[in-house]
Image (tube, rainbow over all chains, first blue to last red; front, side):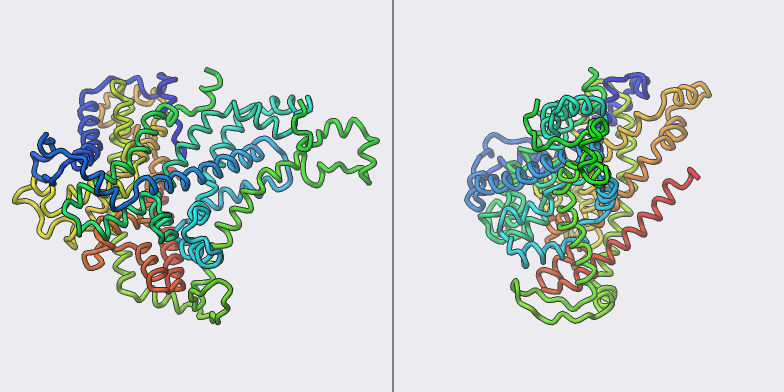
Length: 293
Length: 323
């Protein structure tokens, strides 16, 4: 999805933004922010309580009721490190494939004239309309049953390996680089791969960061597909292990919510930190402003 | 710099300049004619095309094939008879009360989720667009639920909305009985509320982008005509973001159609008594747990066809005034 346009507000205050600063807006936004952040605050507080306190007072942590025992107990049920490594491999594999093949296809479609280019473009638009629900059963049969890729990283990665949205994003960025730049390099005798790595890639670095961030969210948070593919607990990404814990084991434990919330914090932290650190790049991805400015 | 000589593509200008070399290719037609100016482009986009064919196009056809056959799971390589059964699977899907219930559930979900998503994200995006102070902070707040795994935040909602949870403590005697997630009237609305909250940041961002394209002059002239904030919102902002609204409505609908994780975890697999089961949950149950992939595939086709129809209707309703 296109998430890049809010940055233009910062760069170009003439459009639509120079309007009186309303106190009403601030109050509205503050109320909204409270509703959006409170569950996260409550998640951390709940994960640190030794006995669950669901009264209103429980929202304010009481020093005597604080413990890290919940983290230890979720780690006993789920091997957190192992699950995080699985999530990392799954996510990393998807990002790697998306970026490598997305850049190649995006560059080719934007800056190279070849037979079949129209076909590739039509294909790209077409597949974005195929919903995943329809593919769920056939992909399960093919990947798990026919190819025997159940409980494997490849099986997890395969349906997400190349993201058409990423191809589209890269194509849009490469289109904005003047073609004359590439023609000049070609006349100088540079190979296409050389042009891609030495000229094109440095120019579209913001697109790269955006693509990595956008791609990260998908597999890191994905539940349904890895849930279908992995039955072996040692292969499950954290989202799947935690979900299984919520739906089966939790009811048998003394403080199930503490453990669930501790696991939830571990699962949420990488994505939230990554997003906050790269918050600027998440929005400021307008190539126009980034190469001109 | 010829670091990758093997990847050099023929430059047509050079080929034209050297007719002698072109003539050697028989008939004087350069390779450009057959494969295009940069044949390497074919190689660059090949992995993507092969991938799309193998992981999307073939399964797409396979889904339709399965749905009209009697299909069993077998070990790899084992050949069993899978007779063509026509529309039998579709008949059994459409006549299944559990399936009908799940479509009704999705309808309840959409009726709550879509208007709430459109309204809240537009209002919040408009407010966010107006302030400079703390803008980054607010943007991060709204975006954080979207970037966080559903599985993680589901945990907090379970904690908040359980029988003796914080929400019921706050409500006191007003707390619903049975509680939110085990109440057949409230389970689906609670799921819809959760998904709205979770996804809103993404839609706020879409609207923020659309708001940049409304010229300030429109607001100014509305203000000159004596229109207050409210008039400006209705007469300038709402029509100005119409195409974004179409997108928001369609994407929110598709999210609803894909619903699985949230009811599965929030309401322990679509309870109480199927009141929050979703079509995708039934696909999982029928196809993978009960070993009827043919019925599940037919359900997938029905679901997608239904979403297509709903989407087209929405497009007409939301974007129709432009004609």
